[in-house]
Image (cartoon, rainbow, N blue to C red):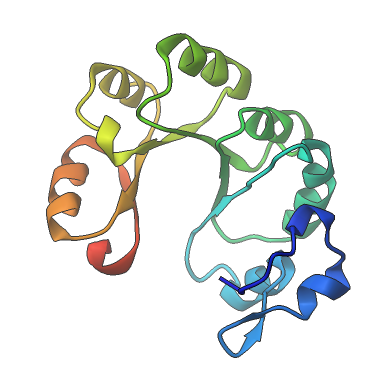
Length: 167
């Protein structure tokens, strides 16, 4: 997005603030929360590699006083688990790809103990998704057009969209 080889996990705030998205700097989570100010629900995705432990203090600090509706999700099941333990008021979700092996999926769900799932659109209609949807809300990603939206809204409680897939 920024035409930079800089790795976020290894960058300082000063280095990141020099990068541009469109005409402005990359927004911090704090500036995004201030801009939104609770007017719309937010679904935040935490992407981690080997830096799982550094996220929780920063996330907790950023969300501490935010009163708008929000949820946090991640492909890494440790993030929802850490949220449950360290920031229990935050709604937590686990993102799952369609091709995850069933045993690995069950392990991830057990570890994460999510309050919602975000599943790849290709997984919709599968029995494991329907079973989980009976227990918790299921969101689906990524919806990119009207046809995908029509199919996904039958099997999911909320849609995560791009381009013209939005409602």
